[in-house]
Image (cartoon, rainbow, N blue to C red):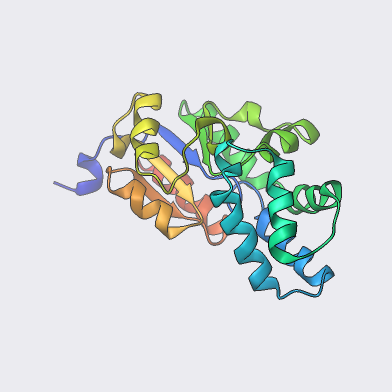
Length: 208
């Protein structure tokens, strides 16, 4: 029997945020900050990414102010929180075609959700330009206390959606996150080019 025909239908599509629903604003901002302060962009990015996890900011254990204080201390720079925050929020540019895709999926009766390692920046972005209303549920590590580095996140995702792994399609721009999801039978799509990813999502859903 054809494997695709024997597999259960996809009933939910789960999107990462940065790099999928929006341009990856955090890394863009870190590189910009590095340039502005005469620090190697790649080094600035590594420090910023490492600290967002090690400080506990991405899991809601500390505040944004705590994160930026650690960031400045590590890089030896002077910059106001407001300027650093502005760089991040401006870097996250929503992708209209992906939001339109979410609406299309909802009209087809699928659950459409977000699973993202994000901070309260996600909610700040939504206040500026509402988009979270398209997704239910929204699993944001800042609120759940767990990142996608933790396999338990994917168990919780299945439980929260009330679905088995093969009934879920997960779209992310990081192969490591997709590999962890695939361990639970979750179907996966790597988003390197949003147009290509959109076409693949539509094809997967239309064919089932």
